[in-house]
Image (cartoon, rainbow, N blue to C red):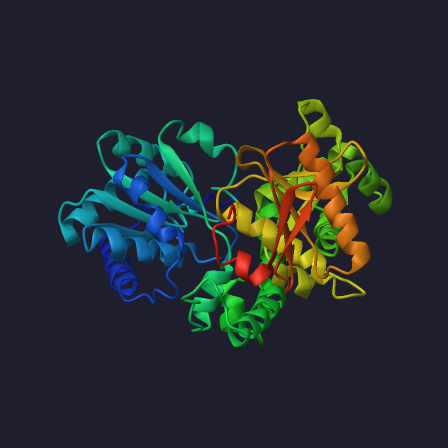
Length: 430
């Protein structure tokens, strides 16, 4: 039997790799300035380890380059552990890495590590040097860094930054479309933005897809998450069940789901299997589940959940539907915008049986999403909001439509109606 030993990384190769990486990183196309960049200043100034997480291909490495340019000039080290020349890199090699970095660039206090999950037990080196006063900003794929176990590895030392696909503002920036300079939009400008929001709804905000729309970017991304992340990490020998489940969810975004009904519909064996699979999909950033608002934690746990996708373009490319489902995709965009603004929504069910799409308790905001407001639809959406507001007094009431601006007065309560394209350009709380 032949025994194989890992080959120690030579200093000469390490110097070559690090120098090439650093020069390439300095020349990296910074692309669209991410909105989160300006919000990172307090975290950058703190002593905390910053961990940038998110779906594959949402631009974590690009954000890292934007952070370097805005906050650190040239006062940092950069290492990309995705480089195939570092495949044999082990946790024992970190001291050699640090010595090599000093020999190349002098003494610096900031480390930028890209795709660090490729190195087992990387957190030991990070924790040790962090305790000595060094700053770390780390990105990594969802297979490792998005896991809940990370909290135990770097307890009390880290801040997690969630990066999403392009927001509508970032999408307009990518398309070189000027932002409105006034809150009052002309008919022409409203028409232009209405077209753009429809395009954004169909294309989504995955940067690579927007750059290469004729390539099967969504399919490749979806397969990478299912097979390279989920199947590998959770040791799933048979991926057909989770693939069938994820396809069903992609085809039914913004819908209520019941674990028990999914078990029966897809013949998945047990409710625990369904729950585990959905947890895998959530941890890998393909989906989000939203709970019903209830004072009882138990009721929140057992009530059906609502399902949302990380990207409407991904859902349209991979999912299946007989109709356009524009209203459901609009609702998904509203959910993503709330999450991008660090808001955690619930859905709300009134005692009279009406459902409100979103409730943000600490902001006292109730939101309905509706593509069109014909008389029947209007009565239903308004009734749901009014009933909910009686149970949650002093809440602001909002209907997000495709292209309607209005204020509806019912029982001395004002319900604001605003187009989706306009709301996505404002503070979500209004």
